[in-house]
Image (cartoon, rainbow, N blue to C red; front, top):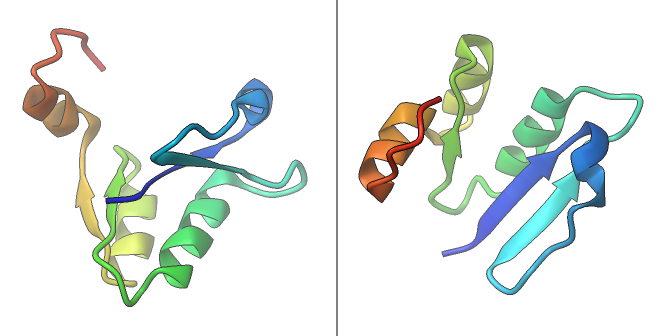
Length: 83
């Protein structure tokens, strides 16, 4: 499984590590657009997107991605942190 993080703002400085690649959203663009592009480039693969943004859920869902919310991810990971 590949994990891709789409980052913006100060997080653009985050570097990829083995098993996790980092895609920096363009400074002039929208992070959501960058996420949609990543999903579009991987339409032949099983893709999961973690977001609470309803509009983004609709956009990536239309491309075939499975969307889960951050609370669902945290619950599955056993984390006690709250969103």
